[in-house]
Length: 468
Image (cartoon, rainbow, N blue to C red; front, side, top):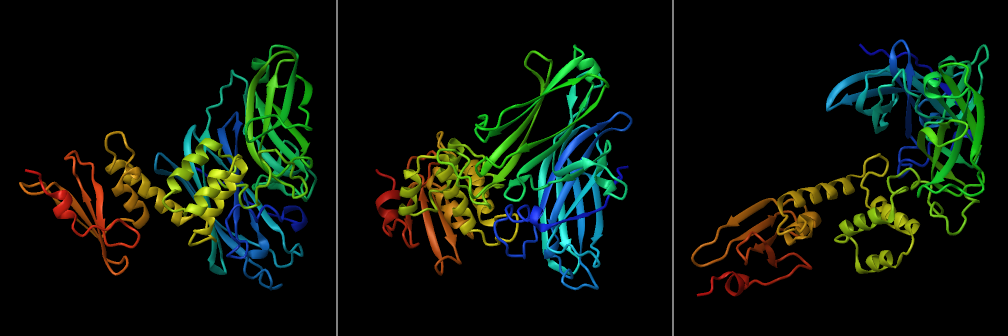
């Protein structure tokens, strides 16, 4: 049985946290009602590994917050699945305090669950208790490692907006090892939050470190895994006292340009290469720091936490190749003129964003549907080493969708095999005719009455007849 160990909430001033609720989703269609999600895995010698789940949302977006006597609140639900089976379900109501005067703030929370080693999918749903249209959800893949008691190990990394010694009357749910660690689930730093705080734990130091002292190293790399200039590697020498240690630190990131970066933390002997390393993605937004030539610059706020923010040129070009059926000649010339990865990221991100039918949700249904068609085309129309989406049937499927009816005409003494695809709701009803002229199921479009498509009403006589 898996029990939620801790649940409380904290209100932080908007001057510190306003950025976190404004960049992950594609538009502020639901009054900035967006949830950020992060997690880290730790180890307890008695109970084994456990996960800390951090989330935050904009309190000002909650209905009822504007009324001093009612206050707002939200329903929060967590589902964790393993191999498609539900491993854990939990749900609770978070009620805000109407007497609290810290309006325009973020609610930040942490919950903890003991876990078994394995790979999981974590999904978080949040809904306003006073307005069912205000809701958001986010999901992430999670891997729980089986920590060894004989091998040097590191926990996951928790990013924080502040770390300080715990005090009586503080937020107890954020306290661990006598430190109050306020999570930053958006993992965004920059304007208004120039100092990055991090927390992690080291295990099995006595068995894993040979000498009496060891060294910790912390450095920042960009999205191409290059060490950043101007931010030196931070080194500390520590004495090996206990089998476990708490590793906390800060990095001033005010000099970094906007973009995607990684915090790297490692432990080594006093001399030698790192024995173990952890890495975790962060997002930087500095509107005054847009240095030319840095591949992590000139990204919009909304792009920073999208999948394109860290995509390399090879994968961007592959995505663009898939999109070619949807982009006009002018757009194709523009993309092909781009000679840097930043411009390609912006082009592709803005294209999908501009075609998202529900920009206030975390899912772009237009893109999802398109890529499902690519998958279907590759599975059903691939021929002679040619990807299915590149065939005529694949192209029609990707642009127009699934036909309402397919009439498959087999070969006969008079004709070669062909297919007729009917779309009843397209332009008042259109057809596409695909002919297997070679007899090896390589169907080619020979006629359609759809606008802009090849038109040959005499195709049956001129192309499908068997030559005698």
